[in-house]
Length: 111
Image 1 (cartoon, rainbow, N blue to C red):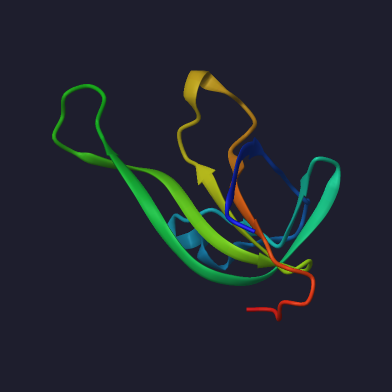
Image 2: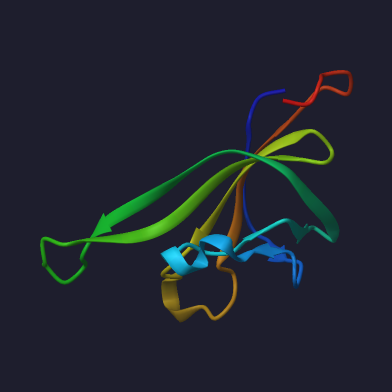
């Protein structure tokens, strides 16, 4: 099955965040999150990267906008999730997002 675009907010499960990288300014990646009423468990981080963007006020500086993660879940799906450092429109919630999902075949081995 091909990668499917989702773009929906996810809710981290309290007390499951990996806080080891927070001192370096990264978000605490949740080991579990709720999406569409279902608890999803992350079992493997395949890769991570950052997205930057120019200042919106004319400065030549670049600002860190999003922290991206490609992860494998306990159900053997691969998901791309991100943490939005500057939510648009002053949103208080919705900082973690499920961008896309690649659902593995049932007999496909875990990556």
